[in-house]
Length: 168
Ligand SMILES: [Zn+2]
Image (tube, rainbow, N blue to C red; front, side, top):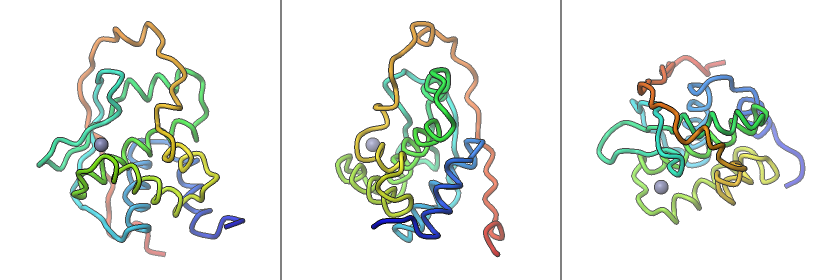
C-alpha cells in the first residue's frame, strides 16, 4: 500500500483543511460510510465543557454526541497545527459515532476506528496513527489554568447535511 489513491487523497485533504466542527463531523460520517457502508441520519453534535479526562460521549438511546470543547481548546492552545487538532476531533467523534451505530464494545469500537481511518486515510496519516494509539497521545499536558475554566453554555453544531451536497 504505497501511494495514496484518489479516495485517500480526497479524505486527507478534507480533514487537513476542515475549518469547523461541522466539517470534521461530515468527514466522520462520510469515512464510516465509505469504509463500512453504514450511516445514521439525524445525529446531532453538541459542544460542552466536560472534565478533561472525557473526550466525548454518546448518551445511549439519543441521537446526540457531545464533544468536550475544553479538550480541543487545550490542544489548540498548545499551538498544534490544524491537521493535529482535526485528527483529535475526528478520532473522538468517530469513536462515539460507532457507538451510536450500535457497537457497544469498547474493544470493538477501537478496532473499527483504526480500520476506518486506515482504509480512508492510509496507515501513515496522523489521524490513522492516532486511531491505533489513542487520541490522548495528542495531549502533551494539561495547563493548570484549563482546569478551572468556567463552564460555558452547551452549543449545538449546525448540521449542513444535505442530500445534494456531494453530487458531482
Ligand atoms: Zn467508547
